[in-house]
Every structure is written in C-alpha cells, then in structure tokens.
Length: 263
Image 1 (cartoon, helix red, strand yellow):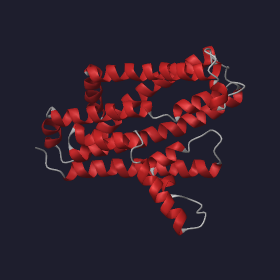
Image 2 (spheres, one colour; image 1 turned 135 degrees about the vertical axis):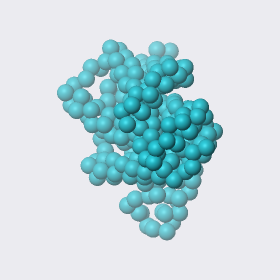
Image 3 (cartoon, rainbow, N blue to C red; image 1 turned 60 degrees about the horizontal axis):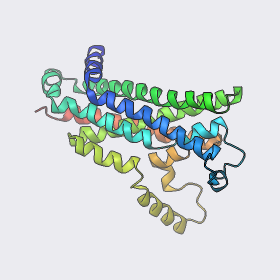
Image 4 (cartoon, rainbow, N blue to C red; image 1 turned 90 degrees about the vertical axis):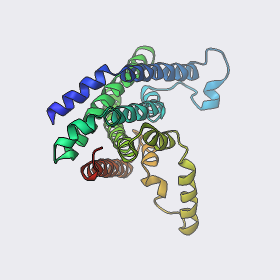
C-alpha cells in the first residue's frame, strides 16, 4: 500500500496539471479576499456595505466562513481529483499493476488516499493564503475565533473528503475524464440545485412544516449548512451526511475495481 501511494505521489508531483491547479487555487484565495475587502472597505464609495449588510465591517470569522462555504475551490479540486484518477487508467497503470493482484481494491484505496493528500495540500495553500491575508489586513484572531475556526475547518475538511470520494467514484465508474467531470461539475456549480428545490417544494406540500427537507440530506445541501453558529443538532446531521457519502462512494469505487476486468 505504501509503495503504491509513493508511486502515485511521484506521478502527482511530476504532473503539470497539479501545479497549475495549485496556482489557480491560490489565485482564487487572493481574488476572493480582494473582493471581500472591497465590499467591506468600499473604497470607491459605491455603498456596497449597505447593500450587502456589512455596515460596521466584517469580522474575521464571517470573512473566512464566506470563503470556506464557497464553491470556487471545490470546482478546482473536482478537476484535480478527476484528472489524477483518470490518468492511471488512461496511461495503462491499472493494467500493469492491478492485473497482477487479486486485491484490486487496495490499489483503488491507495489511489484515493493519494488524491486526498493532493487535495489536502491544495486546500492548505488556498486557505493558508486567505487566512494569512485576513490576519494581515483585517481583524486579528481572538481565542474564541481560533476555536471556532478549528472546528469549522475540521467539518469542511470532512466534506472535501466526501466530495473527493464522490468525484473519485464518478471517474472510476465511467473510466474517463469527461465521465468524471460532468457529474462533478453539475454538483459543484449548483446546477442540480433546481432538482433539490423541487423536491423541497414537494415535501413542503405533502408535509406541513417538515422538520427536515430532502436537500438537507444531499451532500451539497448539507455543505451549505456548515457554519460556526450552527446548532449541535445541525452539526451532527451534516457530519453524519458527509460521513455516509464518503463511506458509500469510496466503498462503491473499491467494489467496482475489484469486480471489474482490467483491460
């Protein structure tokens, strides 16, 4: 397993796409911070603070929470996971390595773990850049902010692992970059949100003031509920949702690889 991961990481480091996407992730952090800074300071006198409800400024946690819940970085990571996963199939790595072992699921697991190492590195670069800019140019962290930020980051990281497992599954299922990218981008860009809204409307029509809606149990719906101010019940629900998606998506990927003939 360790040797497989080392081989995957070597290939990841040598891939031009890895470095390009890492640079894009950092650029997104800088751009998002710049936009939020303009909204808060309103240097051009456009009245943005009043329009966006940021009168009185924006504190550190509100700024970072807005960035964490954004989908820009998630889109970059979906592209990274799909390209990395499909490269092994496209370049014949599966045929040369998986075909000589009965435990093909181990290679799938090592591939996903390698992808998560790359996802973690890109996340660290992007969030580190955004947090550093926030510390330098905006309010500094308080002790309470640090605790809330740490808890929020753990939850967000779990969601990124779940999303990565889902992107990984689509790529493994369709065995092509297009097959992995299309459903991944439909999810991350919010195109499928119309379906969840229709399901929510149906649930509200059938049940008077339901406690939960169907969108609460979709991965993107649970992700949008992530907040440092969320209740304990909400946190438990969103964490459980992310964990279920992670286990099911990764389990199905390993099952497919184990049962599939290598060509």
